[in-house]
Length: 178
Image 1 (cartoon, rainbow, N blue to C red):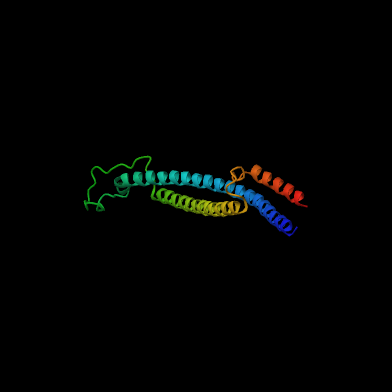
Image 2 (cartoon, rainbow, N blue to C red):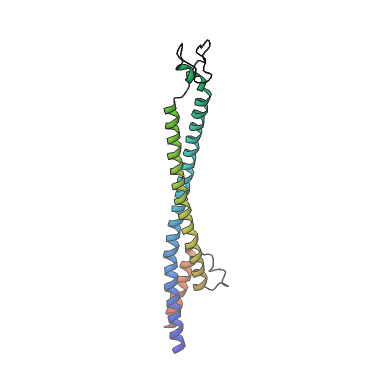
């Protein structure tokens, strides 16, 4: 009778542990969903950063290519050229219609820097979340193996159904011992 009571106590403890595993598994599923959402956000922020960086590079290159035209806009007859010092300006470069201003280049740079900060923040949040998920999953798997017989292949799937099946079996076994 004493061995029977001890076995019953062990089965109840195992049953409590498995019920805790069921809740833990639900928490893991939530963390997995959160990780996926954070990954999508990080990818979206990466795309935004790439677009902002490309816009900045395009404006910056266009600005550099138009420097002669920008300098020529400020040339005055009788005043020295800031590049060569000549007082005469017989054929000044004409500024292109699409030439960005320095202000536009600076705004594009600020937009790129902001997009970069958003990308870094969302990537960090994703990495932190996935690390939490991996640590929780590893601990869950260890507890699962500790509570259940690792040689019982039917029980080791880790699915909700297999856990529920083990709970039913243990509840039946506990009833049978009383």
